[in-house]
Image (cartoon, rainbow, N blue to C red; front, top):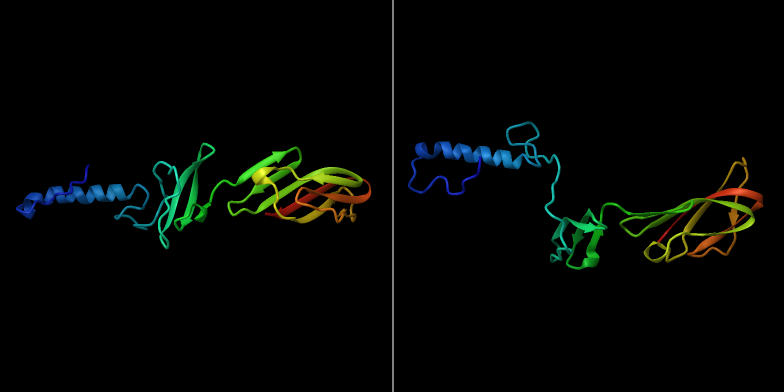
Length: 185
């Protein structure tokens, strides 16, 4: 059933156009029900899901205070973005943060630029640990760091004053397996 925009015609009697008008109401209900609950069921008008058309090639750049929720293709996948302002820097990616794993080092960069790195390392007395990640995945400011030690109840690992955006030095007595989590930008 297809919606007919020109029903009824100005000179039509309602009794003649009644079937076409009813068909239009049915077509509207069917079309609306694609992403919503239909008009004729409980929860009418509420969203079931949101389907976007093909991803945009660029941010929409609408003038403030108009906001836009849209998709763009990043690394071959549609990703959800929110933009509140005309500048591309106003756009925030809401889905699929950047995740990398190098050896025992894991890293995630959130859509808001917060970087979280965690991992395990083997140490012996004083051990230098380098954070994996270069370019956009590297820390740009010295992160907050939490260290732990596996397998030795009650013992701890500390780090030296040599902590930088590139890594830290873990210090403990004898051989150990350490764990860490670092959070920064």
